[in-house]
Image (cartoon, rainbow, N blue to C red; front, top):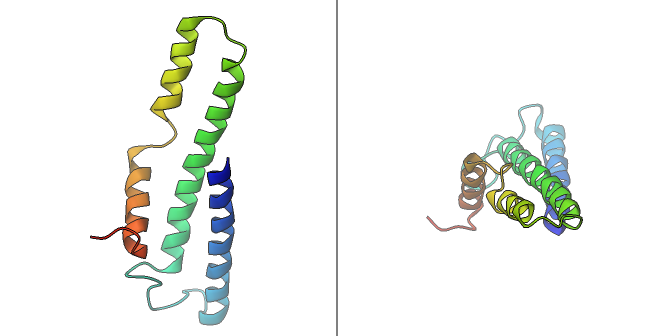
Length: 110
């Protein structure tokens, strides 16, 4: 819950930066990249994809947690555990997006 809340806050900040750049530089925004090669719009799009995936996964885990508290069948416990570990709302593309974001900002060395 804390991670998704922080992501929502960072997404709001990113949208604010994008609106500020549109105000200062026009609809195209800044001509120079923000970090290495991405513009602000690309950061905002990547952040939106990550936030959507992690928000869906959080909803699933909250539902699993509620259902697990009322289940007495051990087979159903194993199904809930596999759903918890599988993370169906976080596709492989999300991991690539996160890695690209970390590389772009310099938080992950080449």
